[in-house]
Image 1 (cartoon, rainbow, N blue to C red):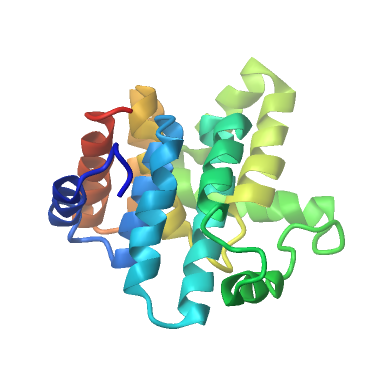
Image 2 (image 1 turned 180 degrees about the vertical axis):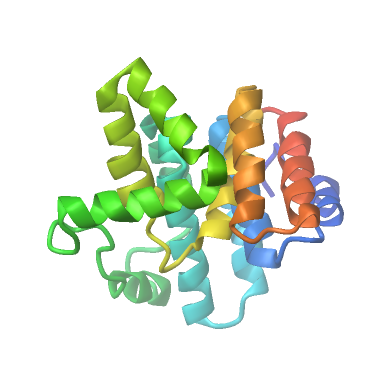
Length: 223
């Protein structure tokens, strides 16, 4: 087992985040570790979940969910951390393994042929409005007042291209991963917004609190 994670630590994560299903618990943990730059531990945590799954198809689905979580969180924690996290994760997939073959069949989710700019912007706007609710217009206006290009990039690239893709990770679970990613960054305003956003996307209060507790546990121990 990774020298930075002990069995007792993993068990405590399970105990503190029982409101989250097994896959989501691991996704939130990995999102928090990536954001906290604990990337050396990501492979250990992902392997733990893979060992709990019997079928190659289940393992591939979890790996793809994890890739999506890490990619989506790049708009919150930065691309370098996402690259490092994905490198750790994909070290688990042997190049000629059945798992690698299964993953090779996953279609590109964000190719140019998939959506037009206008479709991507509409998808982003729908998600943005869903997360921020009655405050969406105010938040978007604030972004535009800071820099119009910022608002456009957030709406099209962050919410449209990244966060709005839901074939493997839906809006609720994406927001729970966002909580995991934001806790290590000490950004209380954004964290509050995404806790509320998770609830608007269908998460129960127990799920939101579980994600917060799990991320805070991870932040108490760094490599």
